[in-house]
Image (cartoon, rainbow over the protein chains, first blue to last red):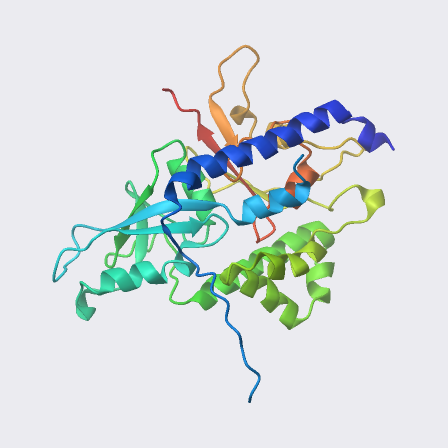
Length: 52
Length: 275
């Protein structure tokens, strides 16, 4: 298919790899030193009982 | 080797450490301590700041409290832009935590939309999803969904439930294989140095000749000044979710993996830091 020919596998690897790496760096930069901060949205699990 | 699915999780669970400080002109009965929170990049300020409001109301009299709004270094923050967009646009490359000032009076009507309740955020969010689906599938997917499906998308965002959201959102990400992508890519390009709030025009993921359009193709067409000239230093960063994807990244892939929950690809063009 002509579409896929325009992006070689090497280029694909480069852009995809770049995104994975930068997201990992972003997590380090923005979150690693702030794990003690409170989450804005609580992740508590609410169990709704169907007794009505 | 990471998987494309991991990108969806990284995008969803991105957090901005933020310190909220009460505007010094507010009338308080005692000193207000700052409040610290991890804000989801993909959510909206007015949706995730109940705790902030509660914290500051403890030191204020009810008669001194009007609608809460937020400001960063003199810029009122538009709650109807995703939090990550506000941060990337106004505060990239600054020291964390992000320092936001909280106001309870003098609401800047000319800059901000009012947001009296979360149902206003819901209406804004759902209207963005519908607009995106009009671009991607001529509204066919969103119109085929039931009311409870729309609610599932909203509740997923509101309660930070990745699986609940994506169980439904994946339908909005489908497209016929033979077409190679969506009809048009829902995107917005933001620039602080422009009077226009953002650039949004029709752009297809694949050229008429069948070539895959890239982020660079989109920027060249919509905002060529954002791209570096050969041999010159880079003047602007093209930022999505706090990262700079390579300009050769296919736009369709970006739309599927780096769109916000509202199904738009929000792209920030910011000046390259000089230090």
